[in-house]
Image (cartoon, rainbow over all chains, first blue to last red; front, side, top):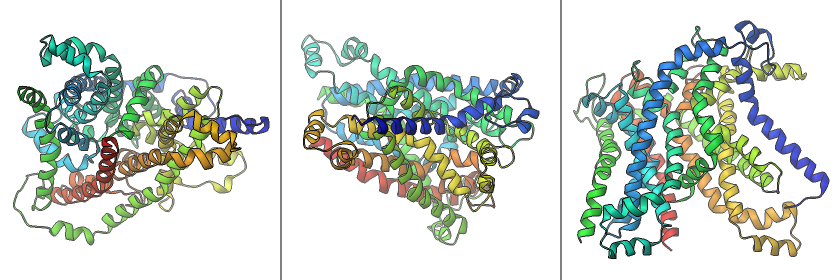
Length: 273
Length: 290
């Protein structure tokens, strides 16, 4: 829509005003993370001071192991849930069988449940499997709870692959598995990026499962480690902000490079049933 | 027939694991809620619905429910309206649309633990940026304790959450606006609908499905959202001023080890969320079937 000139100026004033409001918390976070404790108290938060990297070093010292933990379980759970979702999505969209809609609904409801309602049984299950407080346990949990959304993402995408392609392969005698490997999988780079980016960021960002299932140190995720920094006297605001930035870094990089795929993931979760 | 079997056997591991970790676990949680399980050792002695009756007399439960309702009444509409406003702004053939969109959506991509940490720093009464900026621009009388003041802490939470979520609702509305056929908009322009009039008469009425999706998703979030408030205020100050149901469930279960009671709160939460989600899923499945 084109507006006359004075209104267009107002438009940009509004856009920039909101951009300022959205950036302000990040800006004060960055400036604070580069200040000494003294400067944090004596200077205005939005004004940069003579920069020091000490808070970043201190924060890394505390967050190093948790960041590594998060990276490992996020990576594996992302890969597993995407592959499982891809196979499920293929079966649910390309093989017409009785009850396929019901099974799809069965998975879809799993996207929306409040995790509080499975938390207590989950804790018991994980300690019986001796997976409480372990990286393997977090991989299992994030994989299983990722299956519903991944199945939905892949099923919606595979709906766009023409059935004739599958039929042709079938008449050539290709089995279900061969069709998946030779035809469907090579066409799947787009949904793998969408689901992969979506899963990576949501698992990386998770807090609740990490808090309940990994309260020790061997498997502590970065989210819980960062939350533990808050309110401690050892980590002042500058160290906390640096810790937040370390933890944010992978997601920010993914968001800036692959943002448009992440948006597709957000939209699929929102609009489609 | 053979294909049915193949399809089913491929899906079986997923059906079993989701069946166990979602459906059976929800059932198990309901059973735990009618047991007498207190303390770290699980107990399966069924004592009936006592815990649900107790909920009615538990002031913290009512405070939590009230705060959840406050979120639904204030945070959800605020995010939906701000998102709609931003989407309309961005739809006006803006130069650098991609940059603005990237900025507005960034908070939503980040973990709640991060955004809550940022806001805790912003709200800090002594050295936080909000109070210091207010002082600098001569509005020092507006300085406040923010999240450390129990009378306004919940509103501070709502403001920060609106900041985090409005980029997401913007995205939903922007997609909705972009899916309206160009020809319709041009026809309306020929008829003299222009500028905000065009939005009011032609575009906004067609955004009902987007608005519905935004409302449902945000409502589900407000009901099950835990991380943000847990990190920003921990449910306080003054005891329970920002408690919500997920926090109350967590406190009863893992801090007090009242597992059965926590399970009852989780069940109530589950029922409320499903009352919002199931009708929505039903309608979107039916719409697609048509």
